[in-house]
Amino acid sequence: MNRRDILLAAPAGIWLAAHPEAALARVDVGGMLGAAKDAAKAATLSDEEVRAYASQMAGLMDRKAQIAPSGNAYAKRLVVLTQGLGEDQGLRLNYKVYLTKDVNAFAMADGTIRLYSGLMDMMTDDEIRYVIGHEIGHVKHGHSKKRMQTALASSATQKAVASSGSKHAHLADGQLGDLFVKVVRAQHSQGNEREADDYALQFMSRRKYDRKAAVSALEKLVKLSGGGDSNWLSTHPSPKERAERMKKQIA
Image (cartoon, rainbow, N blue to C red; front, side, top):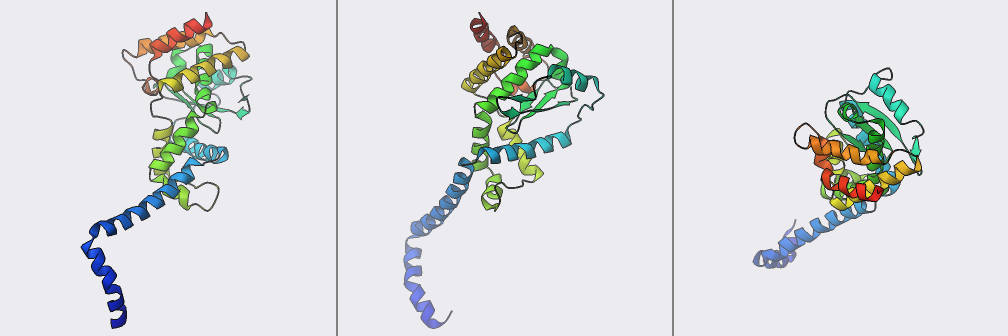
């Protein structure tokens, strides 16, 4: 910079030095605008993009899990109890069993349904179908999409999304793991649980399954809440109140 440039720049530099809050405001506004753009990108995720990120998360979880092979007793049972459940109201479903003693299950927006063998050990076929219907309910009511939008807007993964030139970014395993925790492993609200339970009852009615199995499944989880290892209880609270509510609906 020559002497003339220094002299021209000096007044502004002197003014900013005397008013540091202005410099801070300038930096904050820039950061806020960048964050707003990233958040806006996440908030406007299309269903296609949400399914794409769900598929990436499912791939990561499948790589980390021990999956029951086709000849395994759990896999054989899953094939039987999900017969005719290849789709639900336009959502194509794909199933696998994770071999673990944990009592858990989850669904994602791409139609991923994962059941844990610990859950299958304690439940009848219709009780498992209730769990499947409940998990699909979270997807169909948009709970999964909302969580993904919130997670992407508030985490480091937003940068990967915002900077992607394609319809959706390809996220690293660490980013996918963080997203999975915020989308799938966070606790559902009571309102979300009621909506998912209502969907499960409709799901079972459409297929002529025993709707009382929804109540008995929750009652088993009530007993489990006194001890045992259940991630499903940590993300799906209040099984006792939900069981009583569903009893009234069935009656």
